[in-house]
Structure formats: structure tokens, C-alpha cells
Image 1 (cartoon, helix red, strand yellow):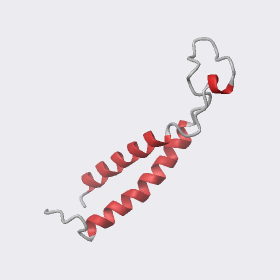
Image 2 (cartoon, rainbow, N blue to C red):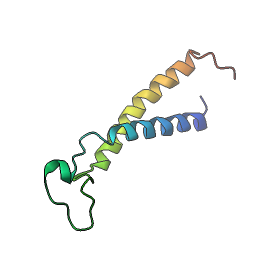
Image 3 (cartoon, one colour):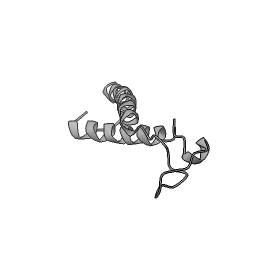
Length: 81
């Protein structure tokens, strides 16, 4: 696999994992029964934890990337190059 293809696959897998992780652990002010600070929507999450979700997404993408790289190496997809 060439480096550009490998990087593109990793980025796509990372974004997919990141967007799938976004709703996990998100609790809004409305669900908590609290009044949001001024200028904040009641449905906005109290704590978004984007850094932790980005790291978890990177770990998931890393594992999936190795699976895709292995599948390409053993020609599981029968890709003509």
C-alpha cells in the first residue's frame, strides 16, 4: 500500500470513528435538569470530552487500519494495481 492511500484510509477511518463516538457520554443541561449558562442552548452537552473521544477514535482507526492494510497485503479484495 502506498503512503498516500494508507494515510487517506486512516483519515477516513478516524473521522468515521470520531463521528460515531460523539453522542456517547453526552448529557445535556436539559437532561440533567440544570439551567444552562447565559447564551448556551439547553440541548448543548455539559461536558463534551472531545480530546478523549479523539484519542479513542485514533485507537479504533489504528486497529481498523491494520486490518485493512493486512487485507490489502494478502489481496483479500483482489485489487488490480
